[in-house]
Image (cartoon, rainbow, N blue to C red; front, top):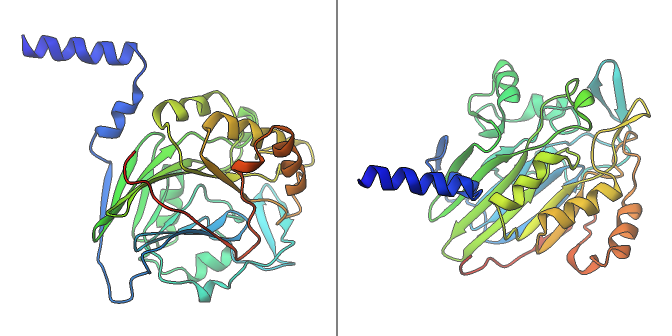
Length: 307
């Protein structure tokens, strides 16, 4: 009888569309990090380094996203003989980075994991990424890679702080273009510490397509969204990352309390300038929800006592 009741309950949950149940399952991976004497200060902030590269700090955890430390005038290879020139400098040099607990890599493209990073990043640094990038990174000698499929997650703990990283849908442009480019993921970061909880959505290089609509159903109450913009255009024809219009559409769909645009104005393939997004946000009446950071600037936030 109990088993029958349980099956009925599960059937009703699925019928009612409650995929958030997945959040209560055991994570695919767990990573327990030691607390060291040189641990990061227990602050909560997002520092914009440039392109899609940010440092996220939360209660002693330090996360580096999509590391790109090439300088103005350097070129990245995008595959199929395509290259793009960097138009800006990162806020800090790679060698100036603080100790990083893990790298969050949305996909393996040179403007997100460049040749300098491939050479200099410690091979023991944990990297959370896509299943496809997992294989390639291991071939490069990285020893602690955690590949996630869509909706899979991992739990990272450090002292009394933790973050659950969930891989979310992401796609470079229309399906035909995406099939020719590296697979990409968005990420949800659910932080927990005595100071409180906080939820950050990192879009990754994606457009707004049908699968994205599932994200707010599974993850309501997003505190902060980091939106990859730029309107990246391949061969001058196909747009493969969000432009201003798509960015506003994503902002409305995910409905975060606050948002920060990243991944814009840094490369010649970025065809939608930040000014276009600022104008579109203003026209949509969402200006109070968005903070614009210059390279090197930080956004500090306060976690909630409970969700």
